[in-house]
Image (cartoon, rainbow, N blue to C red; front, side):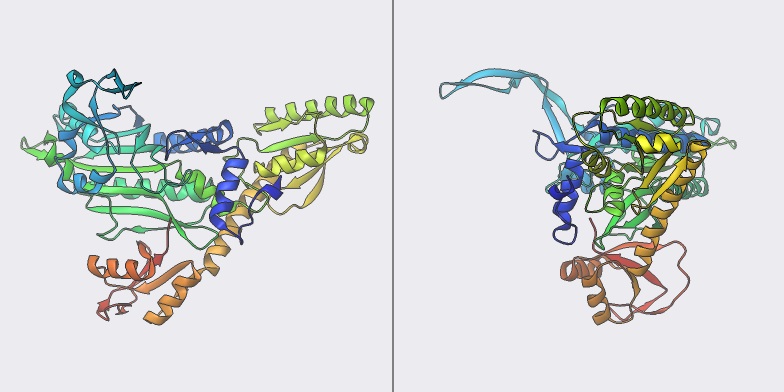
Length: 492
């Protein structure tokens, strides 16, 4: 099976597509730019969703749902917002079709009589529709804060698409909150950034940098955009999540006010934050290899697979019976375990199949293993094999999964550190960008200068580090005095 996957060092983009499609995460849809998320990919997204949802609720947030359709006039109320999304919006203009005949062929066209009085935008993001409701719900300081999240799909009409990383329709969560003070809103935006960092590192085993976007890169309509940035194996960066301090921009646009304890009326302060199915693409590109997926155990749909091995019918029955018993024990321990009972393929095919799907731990069970009361555990992390006895198997498997989780993170962290470089001159910068990875350089953010650098090098400022120490010196491009370094990279 692995022979069907293009090697990473031959064509990384092709490798990525091969892994996504052949591991049955997703497939291309008849609708251009859209994807079909297959059961294996859906199960992975459900585990990501389950983990994040618990973290959201632990920080006081509740789930809600808002319409997928947004009145076009809503989008126009916030100037930066409409400018940022105008080129990506899908618009509903009619409510029904009409059958007609054109050149002797039957077809359908929009029925002129069904044209909408106000056209509707198919949700690219929900700030406008949600804050229109906040204006209805918020009257007093006692109604604050409002801490909401929704799991939904959105549509952004992309020119160039890639499965999971950038598609016309994708799944995500978007949090939206309202607060009485700006300080509370900033605290909320930073809190959710930390939730994203924790989830990326502790669940997905992806090390990330945290920081703020420059004015050129921030979310349309935000005062400040916070982000987490990950580095993929090919040296390109991937924005994995964002959290926005929206200030009072949308509150003023939709007149979201509250009466304070002193009796005066004030506009609320808003935040929004979100991650999407792009996280699946991050997992593929951060951990995958030339044999397919490598999934972190904490989000893997199948954490351990038992592969029974036999040569004849009598061996088959004995091995399968013991495999079922061991599988039941592991499942009862809370370990997502599958017993591969297929008898129309050989063990080698099964090994390759489960490796392709990224299962963290394979447990091989043959007649001799039954006699010895053991399984042979093969790690997807490094292909190492270990014999595990049946007594205490649950704890041993759990410990192996923890080893794989930690090993994936450490391998990715070391790769990132090796691909991070400080530069002092423009020539060093150009050389480092060509090599790939994160390039830390002193820079005075300026939209025009950023555009020049992007045009010349295809690199952008990924973030201004939150934890960056003062490191004054000349700007890498203009020579003006910079207070510290920012992180550049070519990105997805």
